Amino acid sequence: MFDILKAKESFMNYVRQFDLTNDKIHLKLVHTLEVVRTTEYLCHHENITGVERDLAYLIALLHDIGRFEQIKRFNSFDDRNIDHAKLGVQVLFKEGMIRNFIDDDQYDEIIEKAIAYHSLYKIPNNLEPSLLKQVLLIRDSDKLDNFRVKNIESIQTLFSISDADFYSQRVSQNILKDIENHTLILKENRHNEVDMWVSYMAFVFDLNFKSSYLFIRENDYIHRNMERLHFTGDLKEDMLFVEKTCQSYIEEKCM
Image (spheres, rainbow, N blue to C red):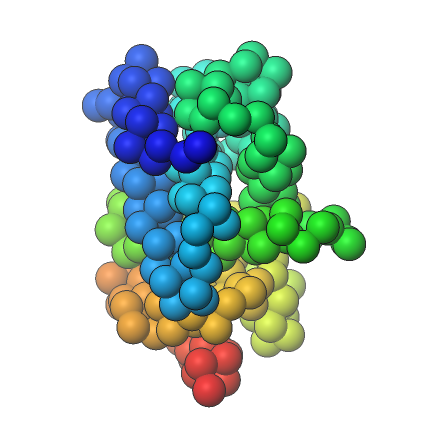
């Protein structure tokens, strides 16, 4: 039913048609494989086994498949150009590529909707329980690996601007208010790349499993992500507030 090794081989065959020397393509390749690892962590700690676990692994492998075509067309992660989740659904289900990854079609609806919903600000209400579990797993796994990505990738790769331009900005007041209120940040409410950076830290306010908070704490990701950047002056004060607020929230959720 599920042959994860075969699915990974099919995934790599698909990705090889893109420019692997492009930093953004390489980032998303590594991200995908790491989201599979993060999913393994969550399944282990949440005691998710059997078909549910295998399905979660497959969804993790395919969740960002639309990113590669997005980057090829626009060299950007900006979903205002094209929604990468919808593009992934198109590639897999409208163009029929899903059968390269799984022979059985009985799980197609769960896979399709989990991919479609993985990057939404808010998921639809009243999802059927088996679908809901997969949606929550991929949303958490995706967010968790984003903390790793933000710990290693350059400002240029992430935002396509120089370090100097990044550090010249301030966090918008509405974004700081969202942090204070423990609110996930809407893309439309971000005004610059510093706001985007803070919005990634705010992922902690939209996690669904206790093990997700344990994962962030074990890796000390909030502090490490903030420490690696060279904030000064008022921007540093803003970021210290963001860090302290996010860290306190994580500790509460780990209790």
